[in-house]
Image (cartoon, rainbow, N blue to C red; front, side, top):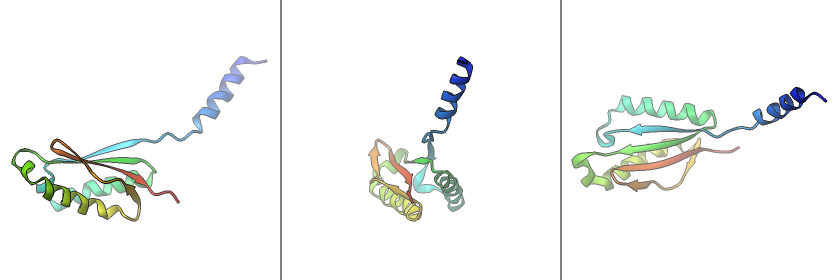
Length: 108
């Protein structure tokens, strides 16, 4: 029996497994982000989701903007609603000065 052949077959079986990848997209200065910058980030997110990757959407607010976390949460939900057709997500989590949402591609 050829040991090299056995190892090759095992590696071949292992390589067929699909690993999930999580990409991170940061929106810094989330309340003051420009329209074009937002469109660029959303284009990246759509590419990642089309490739069946998860996306960790991090909406950061800094300094005085932290007083308006309700506004930031409302804006974050607005931005995420753009991905209704292609992704699913859990409610956003507020952690310090960031709002974090994990977007998963819809199966089917």
